[in-house]
Image 1 (cartoon, rainbow, N blue to C red):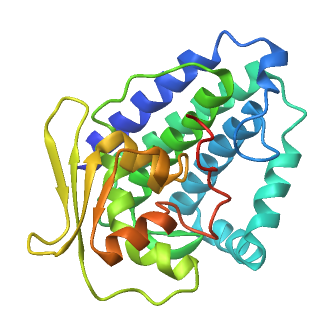
Image 2: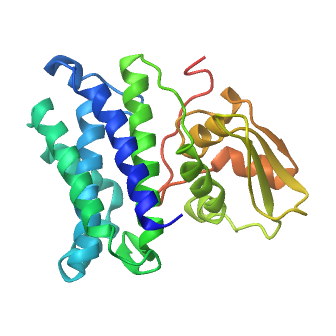
Length: 262
């Protein structure tokens, strides 16, 4: 997809999240989420902060790069400091920040070639990958909010961006665990929200993952344990991968416990 379409999908994903957040009273903003130690407010400030960071990486890389060095020295510590620094904000302030940060990021991204390289926390990435990652992050942290509030949301075709990153991140899943990356390819065959089929990977791969796109996205963003999904793995690599899959960069997350949402 071109950058404009990706930007539209990012704004649409944000709009759905904002609609969910807007009516919350201050007490609900401090509801614990399934991510240990994180409230609803923490989830949203995380998104807004890193939107601003992404925009700075695009427009002012000379200012972003020193912060990347500090962050990579202690990723978990850096994220925790960001979280702690914004806990004084009220819910209305956080919603306004999230909307402003997303709009400014999209405004900066639209005129840029999707193949342009942008620095980030780790290897540089294409702008298209950067915006796709922001969609994935919005959806994944939005899932934490949904789970915390005990509400549901309808899956959309925007899940295809999340599924794409989840499938593409197989090597990163192994690297994050300190394991050797397998040579065998894995094919992913998913059923989208409208019943259509989404496929990723080599057609002739012996190892295959099949199932609902929603479940694949939940598992690869570590919002559900694989045993609580309808995913089916065929082959040893596909089976092993689903147990450690992570669509996001950085250290492995805590994930979710089996049966946590059953």
